[in-house]
Image 1 (cartoon, one colour):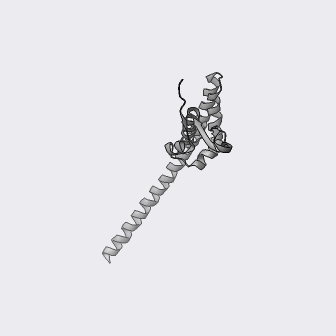
Image 2: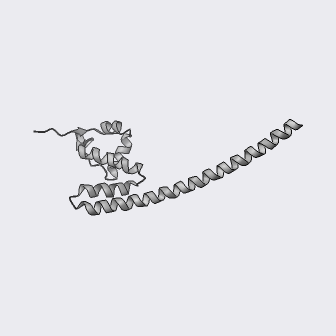
Image 3: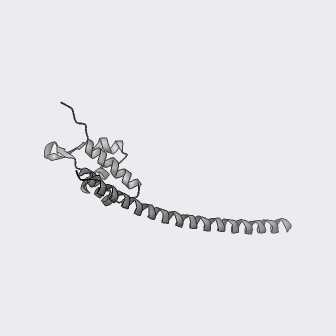
Amino acid sequence: MATTTTYTISDLAREFDLTTRAMRFYEDMGLLQPERSGPGGRNRVYSARDRTRLKLTLRAKRLGLSLTEAKDIIDMYDSPRDTGPQLRKFLAVLAEHRAQLEEQMAELEANLDEVRTHEREARALLAKVDKALRQA
């Protein structure tokens, strides 16, 4: 008989550098579904599936997806349906986030250009001030 690996809330929180509060939040969002044990079901017991879902959730967050989007995509992979619709949905979400990031990047580039212009102007003015002081 094979043993199933399980994790406590502290195990996963430590492994993924999260707080137990964050773990409970992910559970409230339906991203994690630990079994309950102990008196009154107070102890959470996480499965390898929960660990994988947590890992995918954190990856989705790094990509800029909302937790709702992450849940929708992760839930699709849990279902036994064809992977075609799942991949199309994932690609659509990624395309939307890529467009948002590209827009943010363009705004940052414009801001950087403006900062560089102000730096050049300030240096030129400072050079004039320094030259006038040396001539005085």
